[in-house]
Image (cartoon, rainbow, N blue to C red; front, side, top):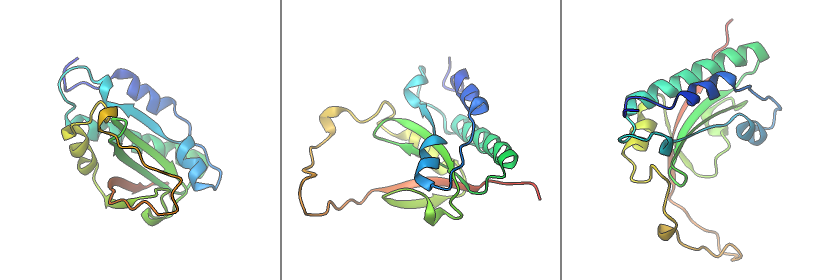
Length: 160
């Protein structure tokens, strides 16, 4: 497998994935999520162009399935640096501000902004445990984070 090729099973995951609709954004987000481990790309680092095509393939497949279910909402994708995975999902959020994330989002309208970051990340295989720091979650002090996440967002397109 070269760096141009993505694992064949990723397209199978997309085509066989069924959308779940409940009206609960968090439940939909989890149930509709697809996770693509970049460590599955065995050759050189993944190329953003191939990952762009993968996300657009997922977006189009989600749109077809949304039409069948009369599911209105948003498709979105991001790179999870902690696990070294490219992820996408859909939920009934009417706009990007409603997406179920607990961090600040940098909304982008093209997948390249997400895939370029994923392909160039030193954490394609996830963040090593040695680099993680223990946080006291029992403290009453709020944990402030400066995490900003680039998220590719598109409304699920339905035929009129």
